[in-house]
Length: 255
Image 1 (tube, rainbow, N blue to C red):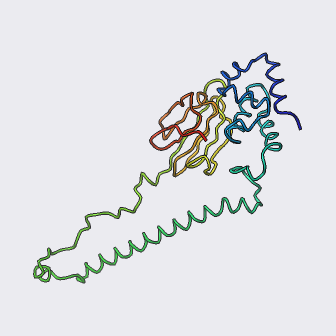
Image 2 (image 1 turned 90 degrees about the vertical axis):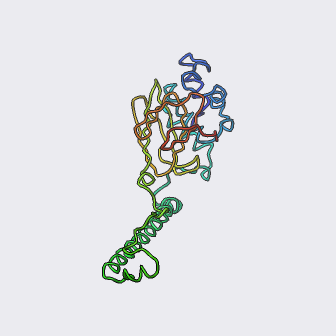
Image 3 (image 1 turned 90 degrees about the horizontal axis):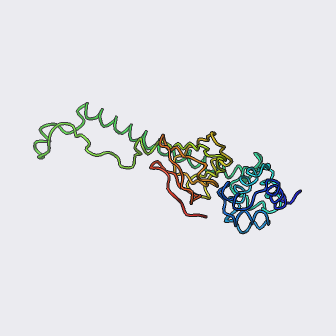
Protein backbone atom coordinates (compact mmCIF):
# COMPACT_ATOMS: atom_id res chain seq x y z
CA UNK A 1 0.00 0.00 0.00
CA UNK A 2 1.26 3.51 -0.81
CA UNK A 3 -0.04 7.06 -0.68
CA UNK A 4 -1.34 8.09 -4.09
CA UNK A 5 -1.16 11.82 -3.44
CA UNK A 6 2.36 11.70 -2.01
CA UNK A 7 3.56 9.59 -4.94
CA UNK A 8 2.16 12.08 -7.47
CA UNK A 9 3.55 15.09 -5.62
CA UNK A 10 7.05 13.59 -5.32
CA UNK A 11 7.08 12.58 -8.99
CA UNK A 12 6.09 16.11 -10.02
CA UNK A 13 8.78 17.61 -7.77
CA UNK A 14 11.47 15.34 -9.23
CA UNK A 15 10.60 16.65 -12.69
CA UNK A 16 10.58 20.29 -11.48
CA UNK A 17 7.05 20.78 -12.80
CA UNK A 18 4.40 23.08 -11.38
CA UNK A 19 0.66 22.58 -11.56
CA UNK A 20 0.11 24.91 -14.58
CA UNK A 21 2.71 22.99 -16.59
CA UNK A 22 1.02 19.68 -15.72
CA UNK A 23 -2.36 21.15 -16.61
CA UNK A 24 -1.05 22.14 -20.05
CA UNK A 25 0.58 18.74 -20.60
CA UNK A 26 -2.33 16.54 -19.48
CA UNK A 27 -5.29 18.81 -20.40
CA UNK A 28 -6.66 18.09 -16.90
CA UNK A 29 -7.88 21.07 -14.88
CA UNK A 30 -5.55 22.30 -12.15
CA UNK A 31 -8.17 21.83 -9.41
CA UNK A 32 -8.45 18.14 -10.34
CA UNK A 33 -4.66 17.71 -10.31
CA UNK A 34 -4.47 19.25 -6.82
CA UNK A 35 -7.40 17.10 -5.67
CA UNK A 36 -5.57 13.93 -6.74
CA UNK A 37 -2.38 15.02 -4.95
CA UNK A 38 -4.48 15.72 -1.83
CA UNK A 39 -6.41 12.43 -2.32
CA UNK A 40 -9.68 14.39 -2.32
CA UNK A 41 -11.23 12.22 -5.03
CA UNK A 42 -14.77 13.34 -4.24
CA UNK A 43 -13.92 16.67 -5.92
CA UNK A 44 -13.80 14.88 -9.29
CA UNK A 45 -17.09 14.31 -11.16
CA UNK A 46 -17.18 10.50 -10.87
CA UNK A 47 -15.02 7.40 -10.30
CA UNK A 48 -14.75 7.05 -14.09
CA UNK A 49 -13.04 10.43 -14.28
CA UNK A 50 -10.79 9.54 -11.33
CA UNK A 51 -9.56 6.40 -13.09
CA UNK A 52 -8.89 8.20 -16.36
CA UNK A 53 -7.24 11.23 -14.77
CA UNK A 54 -5.07 9.12 -12.43
CA UNK A 55 -3.84 7.03 -15.34
CA UNK A 56 -3.14 10.06 -17.54
CA UNK A 57 -1.48 12.13 -14.80
CA UNK A 58 0.60 9.21 -13.54
CA UNK A 59 1.91 8.30 -17.00
CA UNK A 60 2.64 11.98 -17.70
CA UNK A 61 4.86 11.99 -14.58
CA UNK A 62 6.56 8.71 -15.58
CA UNK A 63 4.63 6.51 -13.14
CA UNK A 64 2.70 3.29 -13.65
CA UNK A 65 -0.81 4.62 -14.31
CA UNK A 66 -2.49 1.24 -13.84
CA UNK A 67 -0.80 0.80 -10.44
CA UNK A 68 -2.28 4.13 -9.30
CA UNK A 69 -5.74 3.09 -10.52
CA UNK A 70 -5.49 -0.26 -8.72
CA UNK A 71 -4.51 1.46 -5.47
CA UNK A 72 -7.43 3.89 -5.82
CA UNK A 73 -9.82 0.97 -6.42
CA UNK A 74 -8.64 -0.96 -3.39
CA UNK A 75 -8.76 1.99 -0.97
CA UNK A 76 -11.52 4.33 -2.13
CA UNK A 77 -14.09 2.41 -4.21
CA UNK A 78 -16.65 0.06 -2.67
CA UNK A 79 -17.32 -3.16 -4.61
CA UNK A 80 -20.95 -2.21 -5.32
CA UNK A 81 -19.79 1.04 -6.96
CA UNK A 82 -17.65 -0.70 -9.56
CA UNK A 83 -20.41 -0.77 -12.17
CA UNK A 84 -19.39 -1.66 -15.68
CA UNK A 85 -16.12 -3.39 -14.67
CA UNK A 86 -15.29 -6.98 -15.74
CA UNK A 87 -16.05 -9.64 -13.12
CA UNK A 88 -14.89 -13.21 -12.72
CA UNK A 89 -16.28 -15.66 -15.23
CA UNK A 90 -17.79 -17.75 -12.45
CA UNK A 91 -19.68 -14.80 -10.96
CA UNK A 92 -23.44 -15.18 -10.96
CA UNK A 93 -23.86 -11.41 -11.34
CA UNK A 94 -21.60 -11.47 -14.40
CA UNK A 95 -23.65 -14.23 -15.99
CA UNK A 96 -26.86 -12.33 -15.34
CA UNK A 97 -25.36 -9.08 -16.68
CA UNK A 98 -24.04 -10.52 -19.95
CA UNK A 99 -26.14 -13.58 -20.77
CA UNK A 100 -29.57 -12.08 -20.09
CA UNK A 101 -29.27 -9.26 -22.69
CA UNK A 102 -27.99 -11.78 -25.23
CA UNK A 103 -30.99 -14.04 -24.58
CA UNK A 104 -33.37 -11.11 -24.99
CA UNK A 105 -31.74 -10.11 -28.28
CA UNK A 106 -31.81 -13.73 -29.48
CA UNK A 107 -35.52 -14.10 -28.63
CA UNK A 108 -36.33 -10.82 -30.37
CA UNK A 109 -34.39 -11.90 -33.49
CA UNK A 110 -36.09 -15.31 -33.52
CA UNK A 111 -39.53 -13.65 -33.30
CA UNK A 112 -38.70 -11.36 -36.21
CA UNK A 113 -37.47 -14.29 -38.31
CA UNK A 114 -40.64 -16.24 -37.46
CA UNK A 115 -42.91 -13.43 -38.67
CA UNK A 116 -40.84 -13.04 -41.83
CA UNK A 117 -41.12 -16.78 -42.50
CA UNK A 118 -44.90 -16.72 -41.94
CA UNK A 119 -45.23 -13.75 -44.30
CA UNK A 120 -43.16 -15.53 -46.95
CA UNK A 121 -45.25 -18.72 -46.74
CA UNK A 122 -48.49 -16.76 -46.99
CA UNK A 123 -47.16 -14.84 -50.00
CA UNK A 124 -46.16 -18.04 -51.82
CA UNK A 125 -49.52 -19.65 -51.02
CA UNK A 126 -51.34 -16.60 -52.41
CA UNK A 127 -49.34 -16.71 -55.65
CA UNK A 128 -50.00 -20.45 -56.05
CA UNK A 129 -53.73 -19.93 -55.37
CA UNK A 130 -53.98 -17.15 -57.95
CA UNK A 131 -51.95 -19.14 -60.50
CA UNK A 132 -54.28 -22.12 -60.16
CA UNK A 133 -57.39 -20.05 -60.83
CA UNK A 134 -58.38 -19.90 -57.19
CA UNK A 135 -59.15 -16.19 -57.41
CA UNK A 136 -62.24 -14.59 -58.92
CA UNK A 137 -62.60 -15.02 -62.69
CA UNK A 138 -62.38 -12.17 -65.17
CA UNK A 139 -66.15 -12.15 -65.63
CA UNK A 140 -66.70 -11.91 -61.87
CA UNK A 141 -64.28 -8.98 -61.69
CA UNK A 142 -66.12 -7.18 -64.49
CA UNK A 143 -69.52 -7.90 -62.93
CA UNK A 144 -68.41 -6.44 -59.63
CA UNK A 145 -66.83 -3.41 -61.26
CA UNK A 146 -63.31 -4.56 -60.24
CA UNK A 147 -60.23 -4.70 -62.49
CA UNK A 148 -59.19 -8.11 -63.72
CA UNK A 149 -55.77 -9.71 -63.22
CA UNK A 150 -53.62 -10.18 -60.12
CA UNK A 151 -53.44 -7.44 -57.55
CA UNK A 152 -49.97 -5.87 -57.21
CA UNK A 153 -49.04 -4.63 -53.72
CA UNK A 154 -48.37 -0.87 -53.72
CA UNK A 155 -46.89 -0.46 -50.26
CA UNK A 156 -44.21 -2.16 -48.27
CA UNK A 157 -44.35 -3.20 -44.67
CA UNK A 158 -43.18 -0.07 -42.78
CA UNK A 159 -42.02 -2.12 -39.80
CA UNK A 160 -39.25 -3.91 -41.69
CA UNK A 161 -35.78 -2.44 -41.10
CA UNK A 162 -33.99 -0.91 -44.09
CA UNK A 163 -30.44 -2.13 -44.95
CA UNK A 164 -29.02 1.16 -43.62
CA UNK A 165 -30.73 0.68 -40.23
CA UNK A 166 -29.35 -2.85 -39.86
CA UNK A 167 -25.73 -1.80 -40.37
CA UNK A 168 -23.57 -1.23 -37.24
CA UNK A 169 -21.72 2.01 -36.58
CA UNK A 170 -17.95 1.50 -36.71
CA UNK A 171 -15.77 3.95 -34.79
CA UNK A 172 -11.96 4.00 -34.86
CA UNK A 173 -10.22 5.93 -32.07
CA UNK A 174 -6.74 7.19 -33.03
CA UNK A 175 -4.19 8.53 -30.53
CA UNK A 176 -2.60 11.87 -31.46
CA UNK A 177 -0.37 14.59 -30.03
CA UNK A 178 2.34 13.82 -27.49
CA UNK A 179 0.35 11.79 -24.97
CA UNK A 180 -2.73 10.37 -26.72
CA UNK A 181 -5.79 10.10 -24.46
CA UNK A 182 -7.35 7.82 -21.88
CA UNK A 183 -10.87 6.89 -23.06
CA UNK A 184 -13.97 5.22 -21.68
CA UNK A 185 -16.31 3.98 -24.46
CA UNK A 186 -19.86 2.80 -23.70
CA UNK A 187 -22.95 1.82 -25.64
CA UNK A 188 -25.68 4.48 -25.77
CA UNK A 189 -24.93 6.40 -22.54
CA UNK A 190 -22.52 6.81 -19.61
CA UNK A 191 -24.25 3.90 -17.85
CA UNK A 192 -24.35 1.66 -20.94
CA UNK A 193 -22.39 -1.50 -21.68
CA UNK A 194 -18.66 -0.82 -21.66
CA UNK A 195 -17.09 -1.37 -25.09
CA UNK A 196 -13.50 -0.30 -24.26
CA UNK A 197 -11.52 1.55 -21.63
CA UNK A 198 -7.83 2.38 -21.59
CA UNK A 199 -5.10 4.61 -23.00
CA UNK A 200 -4.97 5.19 -26.76
CA UNK A 201 -1.32 6.14 -27.21
CA UNK A 202 -0.09 8.46 -30.02
CA UNK A 203 -0.20 6.54 -33.30
CA UNK A 204 -2.17 3.66 -31.78
CA UNK A 205 -5.82 2.95 -32.57
CA UNK A 206 -8.81 1.10 -31.16
CA UNK A 207 -11.92 0.13 -33.14
CA UNK A 208 -15.39 -0.44 -31.63
CA UNK A 209 -18.72 -1.23 -33.31
CA UNK A 210 -22.33 -1.23 -32.11
CA UNK A 211 -25.85 -1.09 -33.53
CA UNK A 212 -26.68 2.02 -31.44
CA UNK A 213 -24.88 5.28 -30.60
CA UNK A 214 -21.62 5.46 -28.63
CA UNK A 215 -20.91 7.49 -25.48
CA UNK A 216 -17.25 8.56 -25.29
CA UNK A 217 -15.19 10.04 -22.44
CA UNK A 218 -11.77 11.42 -23.49
CA UNK A 219 -9.52 12.74 -20.72
CA UNK A 220 -7.34 14.53 -23.30
CA UNK A 221 -9.60 15.43 -26.26
CA UNK A 222 -6.83 17.07 -28.29
CA UNK A 223 -4.88 13.80 -28.12
CA UNK A 224 -7.62 11.81 -29.85
CA UNK A 225 -9.12 11.65 -33.34
CA UNK A 226 -12.36 9.83 -34.14
CA UNK A 227 -12.99 8.06 -37.45
CA UNK A 228 -16.74 7.45 -37.93
CA UNK A 229 -17.37 5.08 -40.85
CA UNK A 230 -14.41 6.56 -42.76
CA UNK A 231 -14.95 10.21 -41.75
CA UNK A 232 -12.10 11.56 -39.54
CA UNK A 233 -12.98 14.14 -36.88
CA UNK A 234 -10.98 15.99 -34.20
CA UNK A 235 -12.41 16.74 -30.74
CA UNK A 236 -12.77 20.22 -29.18
CA UNK A 237 -10.35 20.89 -26.33
CA UNK A 238 -12.98 22.30 -23.94
CA UNK A 239 -15.15 19.16 -23.81
CA UNK A 240 -14.49 15.65 -22.46
CA UNK A 241 -17.72 13.74 -23.12
CA UNK A 242 -19.22 13.05 -26.55
CA UNK A 243 -21.97 11.12 -28.35
CA UNK A 244 -20.95 9.38 -31.58
CA UNK A 245 -23.56 8.43 -34.18
CA UNK A 246 -23.49 7.67 -37.91
CA UNK A 247 -23.83 11.41 -38.57
CA UNK A 248 -20.64 12.20 -36.61
CA UNK A 249 -19.44 13.37 -33.18
CA UNK A 250 -21.53 15.59 -30.94
CA UNK A 251 -20.80 16.94 -27.46
CA UNK A 252 -22.64 15.34 -24.57
CA UNK A 253 -23.50 16.78 -21.13
CA UNK A 254 -20.88 16.14 -18.46
CA UNK A 255 -21.85 13.53 -15.88
